[in-house]
Image (spheres, rainbow, N blue to C red):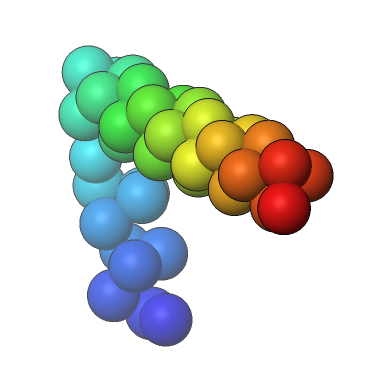
Length: 44
């Protein structure tokens, strides 16, 4: 865990923004997959 914290502290603002954007994309993708799964389960 120490390495991860160090990465956060040493990162430049642009890298932080990229990380936030990436995490947002992952969250949205997970939400879409969950939604599709819920719809397919609902049909069954």
